[in-house]
Length: 171
Image (cartoon, helix red, strand yellow):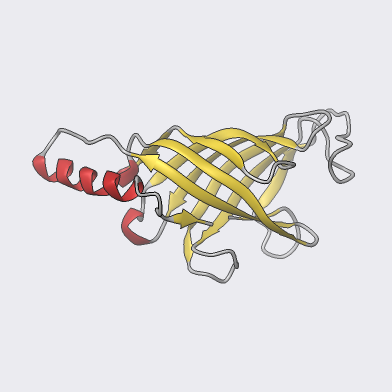
């Protein structure tokens, strides 16, 4: 996931300047309550020129007065491969001082309808001045629908694929 908060290729925009105070654990100019809207590129690898996999669309807000913590609410809209057109809903707490953070998967649409699980979220690198590259390792399962035999078979195949320990990584 490529979160670019300014400059060429910007994918994130400040919606609300928080009322403060300034957060001492972050770069100057970051305040408690800052709220940012995102339309970040998801790629199949860590480089921005890798094949696009979708977009992370939503928002995050600075949620601590003293630590680099954000409250995140994004929908991962997948635009390639077998999950093209499907989404995953990912809310959670993102303490960027931790090497790996765990956020929840609380739903989805399309082939990922009613998905549940978690995302292991880590900052792979920060490219100066304003481009954070995040690696998302998704662990999710999808309940088997009982509406038709064909839908049930497709869901079982998908669930078995998503539950493998060497499952797909979206970055």
